[in-house]
Structures are given as structure tokens and as C-alpha cells.
Length: 259
Image (cartoon, rainbow, N blue to C red; front, top):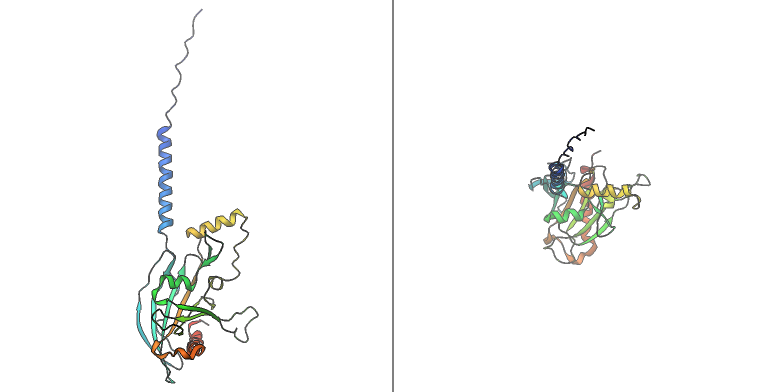
């Protein structure tokens, strides 16, 4: 009986080099993605502040400004400053205009469920000249003839770091492209931007993208600051100190909002 010889067993290819290659590519891809996320900055504002102003009842002169700056959470356009002198002879005001754009309009912090994002607080943290002490928020009455949903301008009043305690030398607000003037992220981002059901995994996926800066909208506004000279302010006047600032804002608003 003849014996049949069996063929030698087929040698299986060693898959370790291929696995190492795949793992290396995956790590490289992860590193590139992480670099992009960490190094991602907020887009620059789409609109610039006006370089000149024609304000009825005022003599306007341009002051030194500052160049645009890109930031991770908040990018800044060209900062423009003006000296406003009322022709009626009241003390002059300094106007600062700064277009800003945030990575997100509203976002959840991981420490709490507070909604944060584009706000004057964020601007103050990034721009020292917008520092505001003893800040209080004021909402002006809604303009007559507007719709039921039209809200009054929201603004912050306070003083500069070097100004006397109890004085009111600064008025601040932020003007969105749609004409909304606000201080908080809920006003500037719009009350209609619902965060959704937090039990839905897709909502958390979207929040993760927003946190990483991968999902962006046009979250921007024109930061406005009107400032009185501290020497022209008498602390005893109290609430009357804000009236020249409010009056100047009403005069200025129509010039800054595009028809």
C-alpha cells in the first residue's frame, strides 16, 4: 500500500506588522485631530466697525485704535475709538467699537448646566479696556411701534477700574447683525436656540461638537462702550450719571444699525 505524502502545512502570514501599521495610522490621525481641535480659533467677525461716524449733534474725531486679533474662544476685529463732543457743550464721551465673534453663541459648561457663550462678560475677559466694575444691567423700554416680541435694549452700566467707587462712567452693550442689543448670551444668541432634550444622545453629540468648535454658526456682535471722563462725574448725582450715557446710546444706535 502506497503511502500518500501530505503537503507541508501552509505558513500563515505574520499579521503583526500590518497591525502595527494600522495602530500607527490611527494614532497619527488622532494626534492630527487633537492638534486641530486644540489649536482651533474662533473665526474672525464677518463685519467691521465703521471707520468714520456722522452723528447729528456731535463733533466726532477718531482716536487711536487697535489691530484685529484672533483668539481661541473669541476673535476680535479692528478696534475703533472716537471722541464724541456734544455741540450743546456737555462733557465729551469716548466711544469704543469692537466687532467680536465667538466659537459658540451658547454652550453648556461641563461643571454645571449653566448656559454660557457670546456675552459682554466674555468680551471683558479678553479685552482689558472693556473692564467694568460695579456692573448692573439695565433694559430700556421697547421702542414704540415694534412687534410684541420686540425687546428693549439690554445694557450694562458701571465704572472703570480707576474710577471712583459709586460712580457711573461706562455704558456697554453688544449689537448683533440683526439689531439686537444685549449683554447676556441668552439675549445675544437668541432665546429660540433651544438646547434640546439632554437625555437624547444626539444632543450631547452636538454639544460635544460645539465644545470642540467643530460646529459653528455666526455668533458675533459689535461690542459698544460709551465712557465719560471721571473728572466730569460727581458721585453725589447718583442715578442721574447714567442719563448722558443713555442719551448718547439712543443717538448712536440708529447710526450703527443698518436699515
